[in-house]
Every structure is written in structure tokens, then in C-alpha cells.
Length: 288
Ligand code: SF4
Image (cartoon, rainbow, N blue to C red):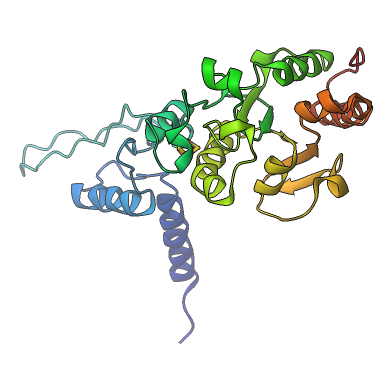
């Protein structure tokens, strides 16, 4: 026997309400029972697992329009169920809080790291420096002697050149974020070895995911070959836009290479102009 129009409408209405409830847009009834409210909380907790350092907060429930209260009955006493109230943040506030870990949390997790052999010769861990909400990240290879001494990335001769390049883009170092693939200085400034890159690069990935930049500039072969892992030569891809997960990345020469090959500065400047265009920056002057 075909369903009546009322039955079909009620069924659709029920499905729609369940859909809204799944989104957290509930309750719709002032006399919602504790058990149904509890079931929604348990559903939220199963779909949004909490981490050890973060607390999942229930989204704020939408306010209902005031409705006339029925006159109190004197005939049959009944248990009064107060409408659920919530002073908790909205769904979007909660989402912001759980968008990812902070750089501080990542640094804390790194600790006094001994995950690879570079720890035995380093003086200081060079985690990274700059704006934690930067649109632009420069990723180099690893700290040198100056960086190892000061605990900051790109502060030696190559770092000064990088600073000039950043300023030529119309930015300051504090506008961008600068870090390296490995956080400890390889002895004698040698290239980091594969096991060292494998041990340290997860922290770089987490830094990127924390900052969520628009553009990643890979300075030199090690950064290019780590994001993502590849054996391809940087010389074939220098200056080309490539994707790295949800980020745009552009490989270019390392400033240390430019110190040895000043003629390559023109190529790097062309690459940086592409970055400026991507970020909507106005080209003001050239690197000297
Ligand atoms: S290079 Fe990275 S993984 Fe290796 S000891 Fe230093 S911080 Fe740890």
C-alpha cells in the first residue's frame, strides 16, 4: 500500500532533522531528554577524537526563538526539563583551535633531540625563525657554523644574502619563516645524509603544516629533494612551480651557491619575482 503524503513528509522531516543533528545544529526541541543530548555528545566525541594536549569542545547550540510557556498545571506534577544551555564556543571557534599544533608544541616535542647522529656534534638546535603565520617559507639545507653558534637560521654570509633577497622583495625577515631540513649542523658543513634527513624532516613537515604557507621556496638541492622525497636534480626544476601537497613550492639556488656563483643571482631574482607575483607583491627593486 502506498505511503500517505503525511507519512512521506514526516519521514523526510525526520531525515532532515537527523542530518542537522549530525552537523551539531541541535537540539530542535525544548524538551530534549538528557539521554538524547548525551547520545549527541558521544557521537561528537567519536567523530572528533581529542589529543592529549587539546580538548575537543562541543559546538555552541543554536538559540531557539522564544516560545510561549504553557500555563503551569496544578493537576499533574511533572518533572521540569530545562532546555540545554551552552556557553561553549561555536563550531568554527572549536575548529580553529584544532586546526593543528603550534610551532612551540613542535619545538617542545623536538626537545634536546638525539634522533640522529648530528646531535653529537652540534652546539645548538636551529629550529627556525620568523612569522608563525607567514605566507612564505624559505627552507634551506641545515645550519652552518654561525647558525650553530647563535641558534638561528641563515645568519652567516649566506644568511645575509638571503636577508637582502627578502628585503628586495619588499619584505622583512619577520614577515617570512625560515628553517632548514635538518636542525643540527652537519660537521664541516657537509650535506646531510639520508638517515639524518629521514630522522629530522618530519619536524619540517609539521612546521609547514602548522604555518600553512602559500608558497615554499626550496633553497638548494636538499630542500628540493626532501619536499617531497625525490632524486631529481634541482637544475632541471629550478624556477618552476611545483606542488607539495596543498602548497605551491618553487626550487631555487641556495644563497651559499650564489656566494660561489654570483652570476646565478639573476636566475634567483627571476624566481623570486614569480613568488612575488604569486603573493601579490609589487616588484620594487633588484638584488644587487
Ligand atoms: S638533526 Fe634533527 S633529528 Fe638529528 S639530532 Fe638534530 S634535531 Fe634531532
